[in-house]
Amino acid sequence: MDLREKIIESTQEIFSTMVMMEVSVSPEPALEATVHNECITGLIGLAGIHKGLLAIHMPNKVAFAVTGSFLGMEVEEVNADVEDAIGELANMLGGNVKTILSENGRDISLSLPTTISGQEYNFQQADTSAEKTIISFDTDSGSFQVELQFEK
Image (cartoon, rainbow, N blue to C red; front, side, top):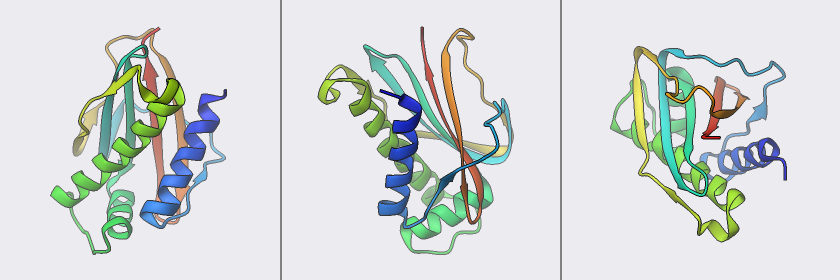
C-alpha cells in the first residue's frame, strides 16, 4: 500500500465531495516549511500502533476560499468558522488515514482537531527521526500542504 497515494486520493475525495472544490497534486516537489506566514494549520494527533500527527497547512487566502466553499459563506479573516472548517478537514483526513493504517481503524486513536494560525509561526516536530510525508496540493485559490509524521 502506498500511503502517499492514499493520502492524495483521500484529500481529493474530501475536497470534491465535502468542500465542492477540485484539488490536484502540485507538480512542484513539496518542501518542508518550518516557518509559516499568514497561514493556518489544522492538526490531528494519532496514537496507538502508529504515533504521530497529520497537519494541513493552508495560507490564509486558500483557507478563506476553502471555508467559503465548505460553509457556503464569504470569509475575509481567520475566525472561528475558518478554524472550525480547517480543523474539520484535518479531522476527516485523519479519519481516512486511521482507516488506511489500521484494520478498520481499531488500533489507532485520533485526538480532537486543533488549529494554529498567525502572522508567523514555527511548525516542527520534536522527534527529528520521525518519518514524514509532505504533499502539496493546488487549488484555484493557491496551494496548501498535507503533512503526515510518524514516530519510527
